[in-house]
Image (cartoon, rainbow over all chains, first blue to last red):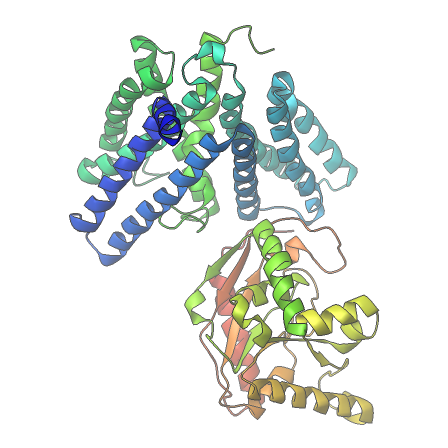
Length: 322
Length: 225
């Protein structure tokens, strides 16, 4: 009985890929503790914190994906909540809008409710239409015009990034199996997250090893041409390796997707960097040791998740959702 | 019995509120492991006490004694009085301990003040940790008002007890004075190095104020206007 269940789990490519990620984590942990000698003890400690945090994040992600679809949707809702809270705590806000922000938090609950219901149309338009129209109305009714444009602009941009974009991750789990018969939405989700986060790591490592020429020195001093190139090569390679297991993509779309995720992950990363630069801070928080805050970790996903979702839906689920 | 209520409240309710708000602690290692000690913080919200008490492990929570206004917490509302005594285990401080001669003129206020100092002394003798807000009241959200001298009195009577200055940021946005709706924002807690009585009241108050202002510069404080 038990052996049958183990055999069934091992036949699921999602479980195999997650197992492979754990294998990589073991190797990375050994390398960091045994062979890497960072230039300073502080760098070494940061590297160790980073890998420890990866163990926690990979475990939370694996549990969310494998346990039940509703567990995963609730987890992504919590992720959006923590990200929006971090964002609203970093940016300048107005005293008069204090209670209005509760409506923005309520939007998280509703957005993930539409996801859980599988109400695709509402999921698509709720934040860009209804929340977009409601929040300024509520703000105007407070009667304070000083700083109005800043307040509504920053609030809506934050909602789009931390709630709308991130909720696309969870809607992948609601996609019907027709477009991806073997692993369904869970396979697409794992593919997207592994590639996006893998790209971040590949950029970081190749940038550290060979990076010399900065791409955007005004925004992020650690982004180099070698890092971007290394990210593209490794991510596209990873994409080719994983796509047959997890996705319906043939070779050409796989290459295109690897390239797209790598470039757009980079853009998401530097967008949040620009926000931090503007606010004069280095990290968005301290919640994830070695990484910074939630926004520092999900920055790439804010670009890759909606793009991957809509391109995949357009190519493989056309006419099946609405 | 009080210990049980306190334990349950901090296990079930306080943890939930801390998760909802979220915090960022600077220099956590500077917190005292055990009493006697006096935590001195700026005061902007009812949540200040809950957050400061949640910084300590549950096994320590019954050693924590927040100083709180006797009239507001004990004499207005029975439920609040029960909560203040059984769960928070406050040390009541009488109203109008204002500067100078004002309280000396009134005998009852003077007696109340002496009783308060005695209670603090008893708490410190039992190795407890007293939480003190020298601004006296929560005041305008996210603004520091001048400290009153009660804390200097306390320090003078206990020159061997460390005072830990703490700067709290953000809780005045989460739940300001006079508001009932809690709006989640991350708060920051900046913990300072211990201070001891310096022998002179004005100098001591100035040192304490300077310390807390220096701590406030370590936090990232976004504009809130």
